[in-house]
Amino acid sequence: VPTRGWSVDVQYALHTNNGLEVHHHAPFASVQYKVSGAVNCGELLTFVPSFYGRTLIGMEPTYPYFNCVGGILPSRYMPQQMPFVGIQHIELCENSMMVGAIEARFTVAKAHYVSAVGNLLIENDNFLNMFNFENPLVGFGLKYTYHTSLGPLTVLASGTNQTPLGGIYVS
Image (cartoon, rainbow, N blue to C red; front, side, top):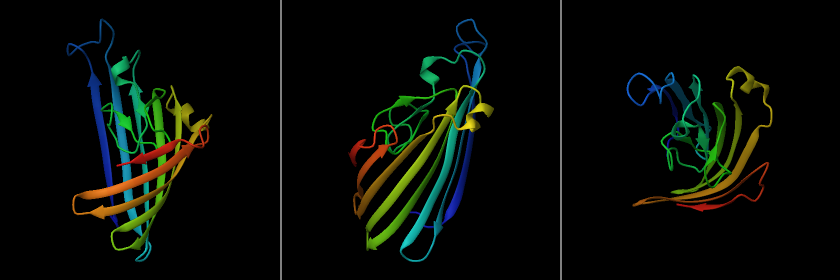
């Protein structure tokens, strides 16, 4: 469980089916980015902020490369899938999407953690119009984690502003 530090990741991909075009159309590109960190606020509290997104550039991106969000793990169903607390499945997004997330993690006892989690999704087919914050999706959850010798055991109850009783996830 990270308690301090930051990481930055940026990826660019040019998508074609033959190296020059996509089904007789101009190729399109994708830019994916993520900034995440952990800020320790004493022995019992750690804030884990993150900011990530993906933008498709060009005309007519093909279905397998559409942006999508859902679940708590990235790339669970699709390589470009971004995590979003509150959505238990996968949902397609517009050509530009961005998520801001925060977790407040409390250490209850050795190897026992309780977290309040929140995230905000903004999206639009145009990157700059995304910042108009039209119809943002807000996700929230309460998470319990126990670290075992085999790895973490996690239970997450979550929802969104559109589906307040989203579901329970156990891993």
